[in-house]
Amino acid sequence: MKELEEQIKTCKEKASQDAELIKLEVEERRLKIEVQRTALVDSEKEVNLKLREIEMKERDYAIQEKKLAHEIETSQNAARLEALKQLVPKGSSADEME
Image (cartoon, rainbow, N blue to C red; front, side):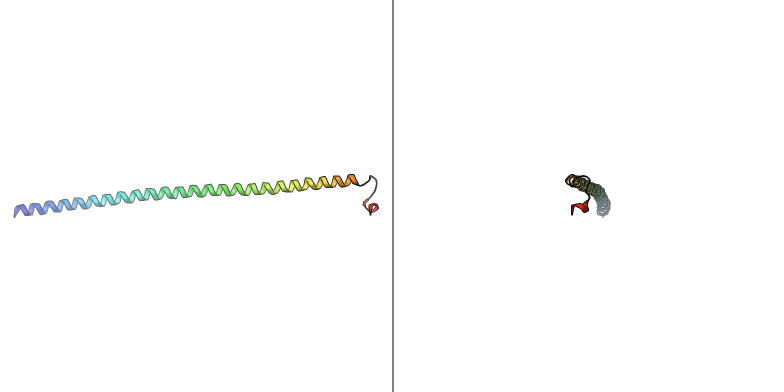
């Protein structure tokens, strides 16, 4: 009977130790998952930051493109005006041309 009680006590201790070990393993896995989740969140933030930088550059390029197009148009208009001035004889007015 004493031996049976000793075996029961040993089994209870082993079960308690096993339960504690399982709790520790579960906690370890939870912490690993939390670390991975945090790394993913950080990666997502980094990607979003890069996307914002790209969007800002795209806007800057679009603005520059519009400015260049305006400058080209202005330059072409000035060249056309000069060409027209060359066609009109000096000393005559536009009214006389009609």
